[in-house]
Image 1 (cartoon, rainbow, N blue to C red):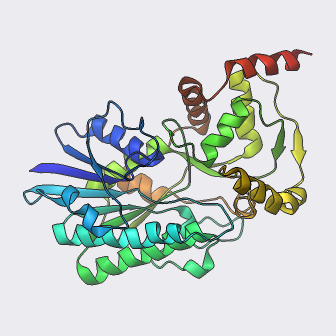
Image 2: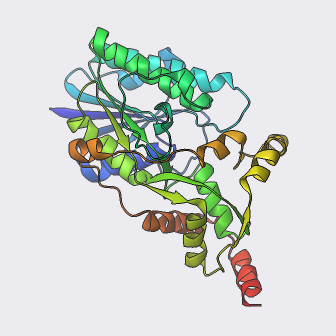
Image 3: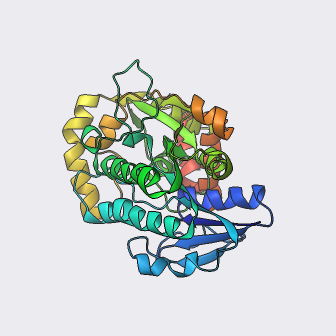
Length: 350
C-alpha cells in the first residue's frame, strides 16, 4: 500500500531534517511538506523530494488540501511544527500554535485514520533532582514544568494521550533534548551560539550545560516511530550532557582559536539576565541567555533514552562530530566570517 508522510513545520530545523531522512530511507513514498505561509528559511527544502503545502496549524480549514486524496494509503503525520521560546514575556501565539494547533492536527489525524508522531520535548516532563535520571511519563503536569514552551508542550501531550485513550487516535510522542546539528536555516538558539563562537564573538563563557542530541538522530527516530512507535507510548530522545565550556572548546579547536578561559559567575549572569533580555527585545534579536535559559543550563540534564534505543533503534552519534558538523554548516552558509577568523587567529598568536 502507498505510504504518505505529512510533515508539519517542514522547513524548520527538525522538519527539514525529517524530510531529508525520509528522502534517504523511504524511497517511493509521497512526502507532503507543510510550511507556514510567509515563513522564513526558504532554502531549507531546496532540492528535496517533497510537495509543499502552505498551511497554518492554527487554522484547521487551511489543512484541508494537505489531507485530501489519502483514503487508499498508509498515512503518517509527523507533527514538528511549534514555537520554541526562552523569553520571560508571555506570548499568546506560542499557546495558539503549540496547543491549539496540535489539537487541529489531532482532529485531522482522527478524521483520516492517520498515525500521528508528535514531537514534544524533554522540557514537558517534570524535572527531578540532580543525580536522578529523568524517564518517560504517561501524565504531564504543566504546572510542574518551567517556562511557556514546556507548559504548552505538556498540555498538548496530555491532549494527545487523552485522544488515544478515548477517541481512537493512533499516536506516539517523542521527547528530544536540546537539538543541535546542521541544516538550521532559521538559526535556533543553540546554532546561534555555535555561530557566535565560530565568529569569535564570545571570549567569555558561562558555567553550565545540558543534554544535547543531533537533530539528524531525532529525525531518524521520528521516521522509525512511524512503523515502530507503539500507540500511546512516549520516547525520550536524549544523548549526553555536555557543558557549554566543552562545547566552546570543540568549536574553538575546530576553528583554530585559543580556547576560552574566562568564565562569568552564574550569580552575575542571573543578575543581568533581565537587562540582557530587554536589550535583545529592543534590538528584536532572539536572546541567547534569559532567566529561563540560565535555569535550564543549571538544572538536571540526565535522561534515560533506553526505551527509544530498544523500540526505535535510536543510536545517537558522538556530540563532538555533531558540533563540528553544525560549525561547518555555518561556514558553508556564510554565517561565519573568514575575515573574523583571520583577525582572531592573529590575536591568539600574540
